[in-house]
Image 1: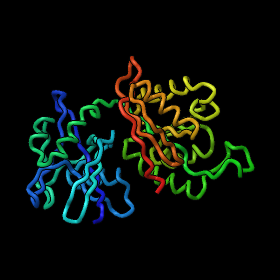
Image 2: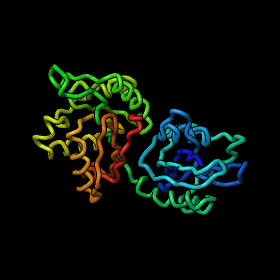
Image 3: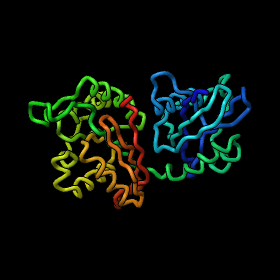
Length: 299
């Protein structure tokens, strides 16, 4: 039987009293209460599906946060694997439809009681950490730029290949789903090219970050780590930082080790990115809560 992919989100907000409320939707066709989700369309990434389905079912635009995990279960058409994120509403309003006729914003405990499926209740139980996130850094490895051994010029001037430009286009669509508002890049041309169209879309400059290039970071990894944490703490919303393959694994490993969240494997393929989600800051430096790896742009 085929495996069907789906994506959705636990959409949360804070009530006037500061408590977390979650959006739960009612599907009249099934007479059940669930978290908003839906099937992946052809050529669509999972994060894009999650944002689209939430908009269709709740009427709200959202910014994605930390990944909450996935659930596999059997449906009439085969096995379904549904992937979920924490998400914050950024606008819109609910309108009843034939598919969804009611939306309720409920405290976590009441939402869990109302949900029809244990798999949704389990996801909500993991939401607490995601609601503590106060800062986000999207740490990107530059897109495909060929091999440095075959490039005749200075390595910092090695440009993206056609495949690299395709990957950059995918990143351009993906990173705003996580609320990207600031853009930083190591100096090499391939790093800047990977995020320049995104920066144009956002109407912001690309801020150069020599400490997060291979040349700068390998000389003083501690200074590079400190700079990334400083970027996370700076105001202005989620930040995109484009760096290189000899920087990112060590940087992510140092971040996770310092937070007591050691990772056994830290991949960093060209065109991939890490979602780094932090808590705290001002005056204390932010502390990493979770790190999610994405390679959606590679397919």
